[in-house]
Each structure stands twice: as structure tokens, then as C-alpha cells.
Length: 196
Image 1 (cartoon, helix red, strand yellow):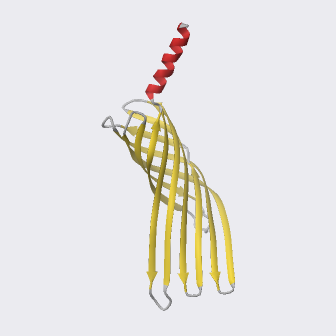
Image 2 (cartoon, one colour):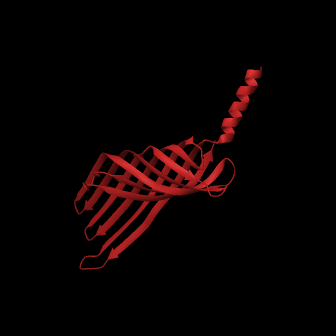
Image 3 (cartoon, one colour):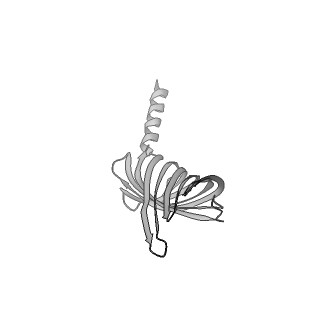
């Protein structure tokens, strides 16, 4: 019986330590639009959205805390161009999985700042449709690349178990489906983190 009470107290201590968190974040980019007036007018626009699920567990708890994190990020963008006698649209969906480390420090009990770095893999995709008089072309491409991410954020505790989080990251990848040799993808995401 005594062993059962000790196990229950130990489990309660682990829950109280709150050495893990799960963040659900989202962000948008755009909409961006542009009209170019020349001999042939061109209208273009784009809008994008991103989401992140990030599970992290604490491995060192000192004045500065160290976490191992597993971020999964999905980001998509739609863009379109209208020219005389031609309409084109491009849809891209990119997936990033970049396990890494997060270093956090808390100058106040409710506010903490962190920096993060990680490396892993990215799956970069695009689908392009071009409509011209008498001709419709569709091209789908997907590329897998190594990826590096770095960034930081701020965590504001609402309760012991819930916080608001703002996370800014740059994902650096190799060649993408368009043939570019490398690309940076900055994103700022906002959401909540559950601490347990």
C-alpha cells in the first residue's frame, strides 16, 4: 500500500514539474496584390497560410531551460497572374519536420523567451495551371530536401497549464520544385501551448 502512495506522489510531482508542452500555432501571409500598367496590363496576387504542431520535452531545468522539440509545419500558398489572353495559378504545399533544441529563459514568472534550432527534412510541392485560348496546362511537382530551421519566440502564461505563444522561424531548404537552388521561408505563427 505504501508503495502505491509513493508512486502516486511521484506521478503528481511529474505532473507538477510540467516538463512537456504541446503547441498548436497558425499564421497567414498576404494577401498581396499588384497591378502593372504597361502595354499589356498584368494583375497578380497571392495569399498563404501556415500551421505548426510542436511537441517538446524538457531535458535540463536550470536558470536556462533546455528542451528537445519535434515541430511539424505545414505551409501553403496560392498565387495567380492574369495577363491578356492568359491566366495562371500556382498552389504550393510544403511540409517541414525539423527536430531540434529550444533554449528558454524566463525573466518573469509569466513571460519566457526562447531560441530554437533544428534540422530535418522538407517536402516541397507545387501545382501550376495555365489557361490560354485553346490550351490548358497543368504541372505537378514535388521535391524532398534537407531543411534547417532557426528562430525564436515568446510564451505568455495564462494559467499553469496554458500559454499564448508567438513563434518566428526561418526554414532553409535546398532545391525546390521550381528549380531554385535554395530558399528561405520566414513565418510568424501565433497560437496556444498546453503544458503538462
